[in-house]
Picture 1 (tube, helix red, strand yellow):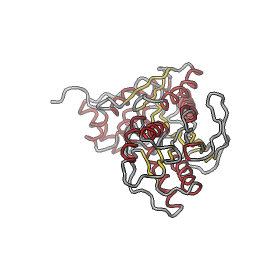
Picture 2 (tube, one colour):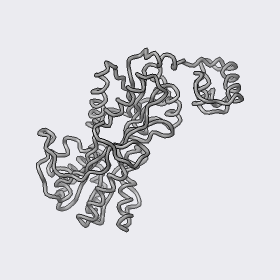
Picture 3 (tube, helix red, strand yellow):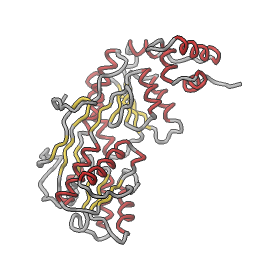
Picture 4 (cartoon, one colour):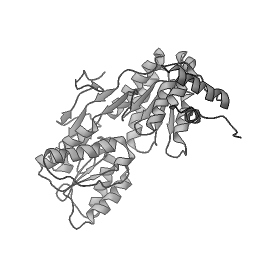
Length: 366
């Protein structure tokens, strides 16, 4: 005999339906056929399943809090996201609860448990499974931050593939480089997957053969140092290294310098994100500037509006613009570009703020 309460996943398996269907039946929401409803109710009755009835609590806004779900908190990227998100939440006197999943054995279950204590959830893309996203969206408002929303879950993101294609074309067409390598693990992040595809897309557009596989490392500076050791031991050294993010690129700068190479004379290195340190190293890093704080702020606005209104889910998501920022690490002339003074050098902008699923730019600064 089983001890303890069955989970919604187990009830779904017993009834032969999705977890979202079990949530709809148990909460009395959504469209479900009568036959399916009876099958789910029979499984609930036979096995003593007692769901949390979140719907009425959420409509009454009993918690006064929203949740942020991240894989971890290391590095400046997550710090920027948190500050952007909190800047919106504080205006409505809403608490922000943060859950990091990377050290948890059953992270999806932990996220579902957190959903019982908040009025809405912002989930970093790729942190939970698509099935769990669907289950959460039935329970409360959910927005995916910097990733694919899947199905009915909206997302606030940038067009990673197009932005990375623009940067890669700059190296291939404007600088005439041919031996490029991509550093980053597409299997570990939806963002990196899209950036790898953009890197390959730029090669195809120029009818050039792309590398067969990326250099699969993590997204922190030590990973960049390790990647430099791998790449620079090769008999034929790459002319340029396109990194999935700035932190990895900064590690590569350290690794290349330690082996006596000059950037960009001996090796071109680029990043993605435009974290503050990217403009301060020598040479300054060519990168893609994405509006990290604004990604989180826009996510918070969608989520807070949905939670305050008691709606099933937020409106459509947004795709925010990016900028190609060319600096010394790719061989372009270095221009003063200090995040401390707020000065910006001329850059190539890709895209404009637009509703997800459309091709029409909308007014920026929503």
